[in-house]
Structure formats: structure tokens, C-alpha cells
Image (cartoon, rainbow, N blue to C red; front, side, top):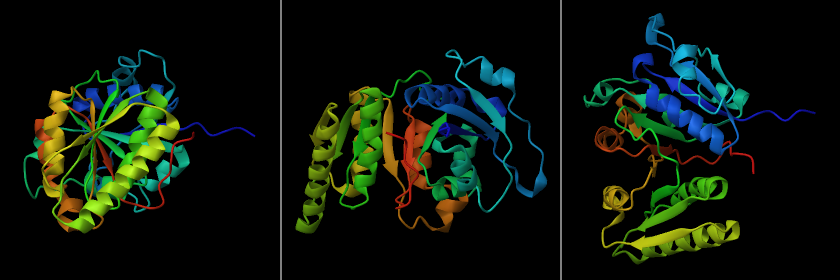
Length: 271
């Protein structure tokens, strides 16, 4: 019985603005011993778009990682249908900077990202193309879902011997503080079980500002990945045009973003 090979699923929004996505996809494929699958994000209302070519992909495939180009349809079952068929580990997609500038400009890919049962690695043309995923920033807040960020960050520690920096807030509410302490205790036990390096950075800011604080630390620590999470109920605006804070971060920062949805039925990488 053969074991199905895992994949990095690359959704191409614009073939002319896709170099960073291709590079990051092959880096992740190497780290997780996966293959890559490239697909043009389906256009709305049957409009035709330029397609990604083998030539564009091959010039960045320096490790000769197996890959394929697949076709996706604008189907209500996507992207999770393809994620399941490919046994995908991550989605990777690159945003043209112009697609992030308007507050209510529709971008249908956000609906896919927010519904995906795997995290998405989000990049732009200004994202560092050569990061090695060795220095990971994870902001913690008072929400119980923060544990899911720790689980996904741990894969980079386990598979890539990355250093994980946990950026912890300070809250006035005793209830919030208990949840944060419980998350840190859970994280310590898990990380120490797998024996990779992690550091806890305690701050004085509250959870509502912890993402911004984490970005400040990312610059000081020369990080190459920031782990963020969507709201459990992101609302129609986020699905229609994207979460505003996420778009603001993507426009300004050079770190790729690992964007996670707080779902209970994730497809997890093989151990």
C-alpha cells in the first residue's frame, strides 16, 4: 500500500506577481518533505486569466522538487476538496500589493483562506524571498484558540529546528491571565517534549495590541515568519475583502505570515 505524498498547494493570483510564492513553496516543500502543486486561482464569472507556466516555476526549483500544475474550479467545495485530494500541508499565495490597498475591494481568495482546513502562508512581492523559517514569532492572547498557533509553530521547531519566540501580553483581568498562563503551560510541555529551542518574551501590552507588538519584536529578532490567527467569526467584510489588520501587515512587513483559522478539524502534517 503506497503512502500518499503530501503537498504544498500554491494558489496563483497573478502569474506576473508570483515569484515569492514559488520560492516559499519550494522552501516549505523541502522542509516538510513534500511536493508542490500549483494552481491558478479561479476567476469569477468565467473570466480568463493568464496561467502559470512550467518555465516560471522551474527557474526557482533549484532542489528539483517534484511538482505539478493542477486546475481548480470555482467550486463551493474548494479549497478543501483539493486540500484533501493532495493531502496538502499549507496553502501558499502571493498578493499583488495593489490588491491590498482598498478597504472594500473584493478579493475572493480571502473566502478560500478563511475556509481552508490548513494554514496559509501569505506573501507579497516585498516579502523576504530567502527566509529559512528558522526564527518564528508567535503572539499569544487570552483566547483559548492560541493553543492552535502553538501546535502549528511546533512543526517548524520539529521539522526545521526553528527557534520559537512566544510574545506574551499582560492583562488586568484575572480570567484572561489564567488563560494566558494555561496556554504557556501547554506550550512549554509540548515544546519540551519535542526538544527544540523556544523563548518567552513578556510584554506590558494587552492582547488587543499583541500582534503589533509581535511585529516590532520580529524586526529586532530578525524573524522570518509571524504566526497570526483569524477571528472565529470573521464576518462578511473579512470574507469579502480580507481582514483589515492582516492586509495592513502584509502591505508593510517583509515577513511571510502563517495565517491560521481557529477550526477543530484541521488536516495535520505527518509526524
